[in-house]
Amino acid sequence: MKQQFPEALVGKKIPILTLDNKWYKLLDEDTKRMLSDTQEELNTLLKRQGKINTETKDIRRLKKKLMGEIVEMADQPDSAEIQKKMEQHKKLVNECNEKLHGYQDEMKELPGRIEKLNRKLMLKTMECCYDTMRENETEIEKTNEWVKEIRKELKIRLVKKQALEQQNQRIYAYMHDVFGADVVDIFDMQNRPSE
Image (cartoon, rainbow, N blue to C red; front, side):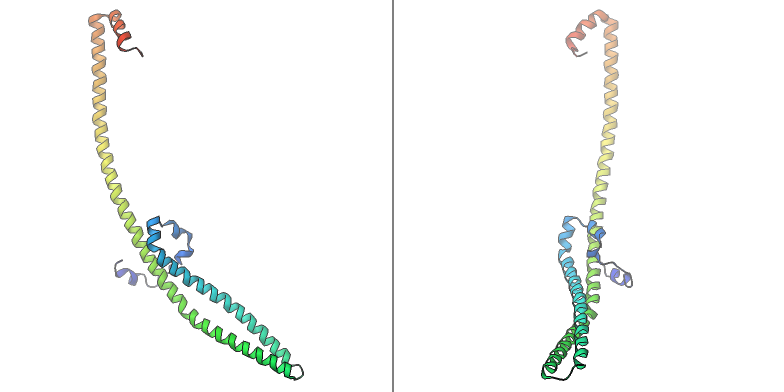
């Protein structure tokens, strides 16, 4: 694809193609094969983003529960068992925080990677679609030329058919005039049995 297109597309909102059913209708089998790697890569990123969102919600829920339990334990009389549970809960809260922090970093970069890959897929799709349309235009032109030729041939044959029909009518009329209807009827039975 020409270099000017990416710059011209800056700021243009493009839907996530693999989530749009109409995008799939653009693709014939050859195009699907050509785009499959990029499509797969984009879908992998989208799945990862969805998984991170789900896990982030689950971790936040768990962290909230753990924090609530820590508060409840803080109100209980101090004992070795409570101290041990509080340490375990604090350790789990720290693990939750580390995991959330890691997911935050990944979630900062994922949308940009998804958008970049989606644009790449869009450019490839446009290239394939315009190639197909150019091929179709060439075929349409060939078909138009063929139809023009067939029309010429059809006109010539229709004129010839009409001339032959007129010739047959003249011959038949002259045979009637020269030989008479009775004689022609006898020959009609031999030469035109279907009539």
